[in-house]
Length: 274
Ligand code: FES
Image (cartoon, rainbow, N blue to C red):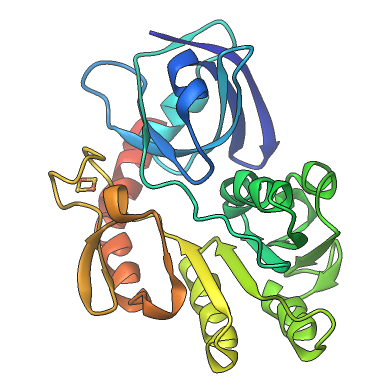
């Protein structure tokens, strides 16, 4: 059993949960994830390890309550317990001293981006962070990212905070100036956003990395649930990723696979509300 140390709401339906998991905290690296179960028989949910405190033996998870299982998890208060926290899983982020990098987070993807951006800054990179969301209430971790980013640029679809529009507009501006053009770009968020970033950087051949979030079941390469197409070859996001070269990812295939169970999920939510 894994104790929930704290559980707070960061944005609509998005919780930050600190969980006591000393062995995971001691061994995790940026980019890795855990698979969480709230109780025996419940669905297994993959969650990126947002941060870790080795001394306290805790990890930080960011959880978007979008289905029945994630709603059950975020309903566990501080002092409650998760049944399973398995990990760390997946390959750590490849960190290199590129010099100037852009880190782009969309919606809850900003939470997944956070440990990666922090590690890139710690490796001596100049990090420009671009975060986007539907509205101001969906912009998360701005202050936390500002602590190590050279600058944090914000975009919102409704213009309620920062520049009105999408993160790609800020990235295009950075790329247009040789003094600010990044040597590498890391993008994490909705599939259309990651695909748009990949298309923007492709003509200049800028190294671009995305973190994929397909459906996962076992998280160990056994079930095939997380299969994605990269460079025309099937890969398992749980063991070969979750980060991949954005210019090689088949985003259409990913989008189709993510849509497969949307109807079931909506039906589950409806049943749970009744
Ligand atoms: Fe089963 Fe990746 S989650 S193979």
